[in-house]
Length: 194
Image 1 (cartoon, one colour):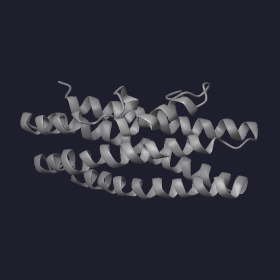
Image 2: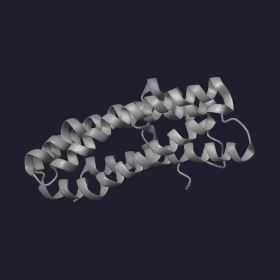
Image 3: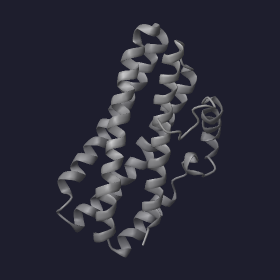
């Protein structure tokens, strides 16, 4: 049985993966052209990553899903501890990445490589993190969590309204989502393969 939360987590992972890959593609495109990227587009994309996955998605995993798993089985504790650490590390990494983007924008091409390197580290880190959750944590959760556990987890994740997963954006995020969709160049588009 696929639970609502499992579907939402996978959809949000897919949206984040598409956004991260689009950032990498956008940077590669501009490097090939010898041009500077659209910094407003990159800022909007990184702001999305910070607002939705970092502040909403991870919080529900760390405060609800992971504690329920720890309570049901000792098998996953070390892995859950690592994933919780990843969530904290990811928050610091996104701040560092936003700062590196600002450095690139303000200081010019001399900061391009530092930003691209930071971007690639962040994307690799995040894709690995999501793969672990999908391949190890979600299957374990399916095996050990109770119907009552799932009811609470499903209810919590059902309130997520990530516009990149097909939901109408919350009013305060409508302009951000519209901006991202409209400023990502057509040849790249969100979700294109790297």
